[in-house]
Length: 209
Image (tube, rainbow, N blue to C red; front, side):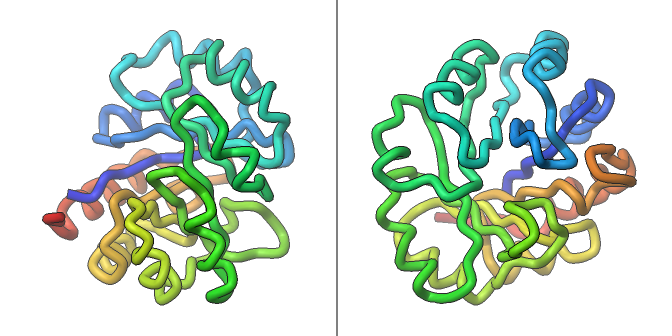
């Protein structure tokens, strides 16, 4: 069964809804320029109110890595997602679980993937306007090319309740990641959309690897 990550959570109510509806991973965006930005104090309050067995992913864009590691330790983040222009040299030496997001435009971008040591990769839509959360759809044909490196693929970019089943059947990702596709406005989740998205994602395909 494909796992589901609800990303860009900014409120306790939305976070509790995501957990109740069956999300496997929770994503919190610490990039100040994102409409889904959450500050340390609010994240800390939310984390104190949710079960500790639901993995929490911190999303960072070109942030100082010492600051990232300090925040990860203080908040108890389970996974770090790097969505900017971080180099392999900077990430491969980290001592915490992490993965890199790739905005694939062509095969030259695909060729960068094996330089990163992480076991997972996230594939998002390419956009000159933002580092993610644009609602644009990723290039699914390039995702197939990325799959050859033996890393678990997280598919993001333009997913919503209407297309997630087709996306999973086409790409066969390890996990799907959604933010804008289950929102009523940037940073505010729509419970019904989350419910339908998670239900369709989990029933779309049973994977055997």
